[in-house]
Length: 116
Image (cartoon, rainbow, N blue to C red; front, side, top):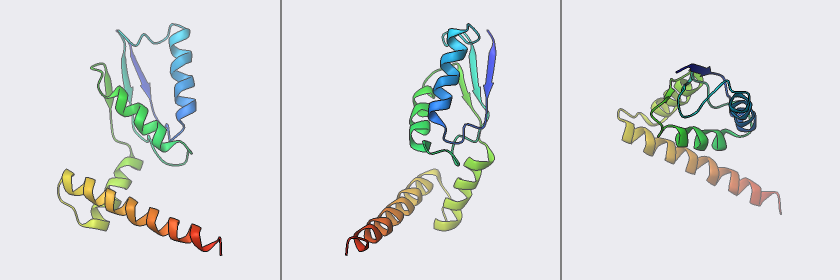
């Protein structure tokens, strides 16, 4: 069993998928036998943050995949905690939902303003 480490994805889903495909096709990574360790910084900078997170969440169900938090994840968690004053994971999830809803509402209202 080998250990493959990947870091600093930064929301670049397409590039991550290409990397994993190349590692598999060249025989460097066997998804059934090797361990895959993600070293954090899954979000930020790239334009495919949602796709990246959905893909990583799907991998989270596999026993040979390990995830570590990076500074970008820690910054997001800290922002949510400070913005909403949360103390539990459940409160953080609700706080994130509230923040997202607030931002979407704001952006939607501004998008309507441009049509006038």
